[in-house]
Amino acid sequence: MNNSEILPHIDHTLLRVTATETEISTLCEEALKYNTASVCIPASFVKFAHEKYPTLNICTVIGFPLGYSTTAVKCFDASDAIGNGASEIDMVVNLGWVKDRKFAEVEKEIEEIKKACGDKILKVIIETCYLTDEEKVELCKCVTNAKADFIKTSTGFGTAGANIEDIMLFKQNIGKNVKIKAAGGVKTKSDLEMFLNAGCERIGTSSAVKLLTENN
Image (cartoon, rainbow, N blue to C red; front, top):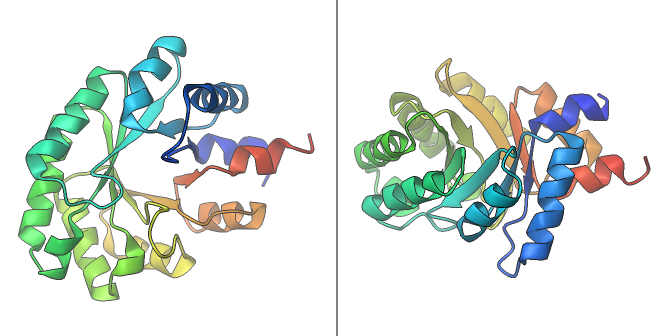
């Protein structure tokens, strides 16, 4: 795959806790230059990025990275981010509810956040590194039933990131309208190609632009 086939699937990401406006600006300029799908940035930078780069597709994260904010807080955060200029929201599920098998509550929360997002894209991070295959399958059902747009593997802040086995499991268990985003630990061009060829619509990574363009 060539760069022009890969980069439009990249959520160009900077979620490091010490990120600065200068670094966010560089990220945004790279995203525009290389036509990435979006930038994925902390919510506190969304208004700044939207005002400085009004044509840029901006993604942010809520309930991140632990997922245990209340549903009301997650809904407020989603609405606030969209009001500030975000077009895509990546939320983290409540993993305690998952471990307690409270899948109805998980599904209801996703549904409520999707309502808060309106016509904007909602991606649901299930943090696969902490889950059994049975739990992953149940979450595929929750994401599908709640009509979210994407299921996403990982925050990148857990004990492991995306792997191809989970992508295959997702494909077998999500609804036809749910897309897949791989994130966490995607570091090489072969990784990027592997996940795209496996059916991922998006890949979240901080390294793809540098990796694909530094020798060009």
